Length: 229
Image 1 (spheres, rainbow, N blue to C red):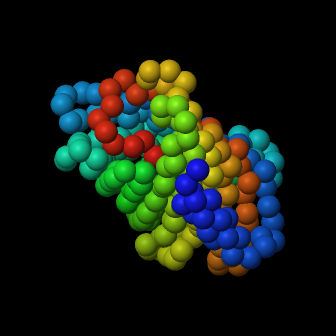
Image 2: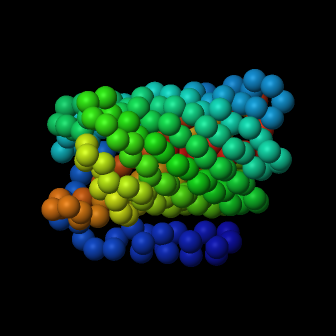
Image 3: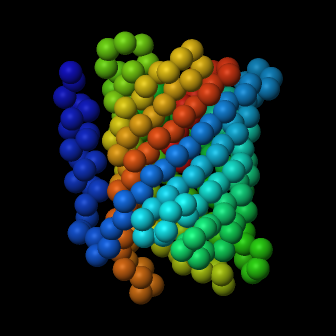
């Protein structure tokens, strides 16, 4: 097996632990994507997300939405969409409406995404903007479409709002996992996700350890990756 993936994984694990977190949580993250081709070079991806955690009393986040993607050329996609985000149990953040735009580029074993989110809450004025660059490396292992992968995503809050967003580098997400083909149009990404929230604005740092499972039903491939969210 190539040494590239073990080296990348080692660097990823080092970056995961900038300091020991003062508080930690065990979580499970689930995501379902259904990719539907509309016309040549245009597809709609419908998404559903659920996240559970011990510290937050079980199910603490749900997300529903979709994103419309246009394939500019092979391996390059522009997208825009909407997502409704609900918070539950001990997650006391206000529910959000989010607009999203992204650029996804795939080249060989690498895939990258640059996403911009605009966040709205119903009880307060102001739009919270954040940027989310993501990089992923895939290492094929054996049979068709079976691969190991490693990914890193940074989340940066661009501005400060009255309803609680504070500008600055907020968190990172790192995943080590395996991409598994389950059928002609069905695949799964299963892995360990580590999320580290920096200590900001008086809050303690937090490290989340999550089992991440993403299922994708692809009804028509356009040659552009569907990346973890």
